[in-house]
Length: 209
Picture (cartoon, rainbow, N blue to C red):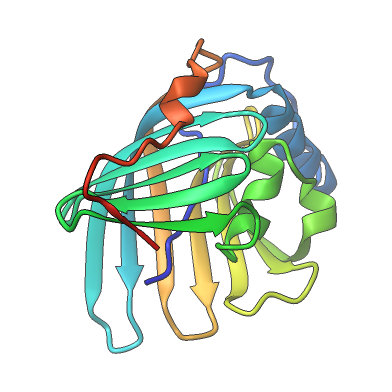
């Protein structure tokens, strides 16, 4: 299973609005917005479209804190949790009493889409703009290619609110033919989130892989 992590912002930003005139300014807005985002908390929905046309829908909650801390709780249809403590990424399946541990930054290819959002990268350095399209007044779609070789992700598309540079939706195109779309709702920014939220302590009798 490919675990997709992405950090998106959809509600009105608390930050000062910037006026976009060109694609270069839009890119700068996105980077500016996430450079000011220290924490976020909210909910998300995720749709995976498989090569045969079948679809899988998931939903849950997310917490993020710079640098490199995040927690994703998937509630439907299968319950599992993904936690990063900035050193390792833990994937925990409570119903199966099983957990997996991966080195942070190496386990998930979609990290290339997370760098500028989580404070560990730069949009211009990590992604290469392929094309863009105006979807509506104040809403653009930006299509990117990885700036460096990635074994799984072929292309990344972002839907961006031009009022402030927030990303409303992320679409990952995989070489396998899968497409994963993630949209977030009711996000709150720059709250005081304690570090313990991002600590994984496995319950007794949980098998660690």
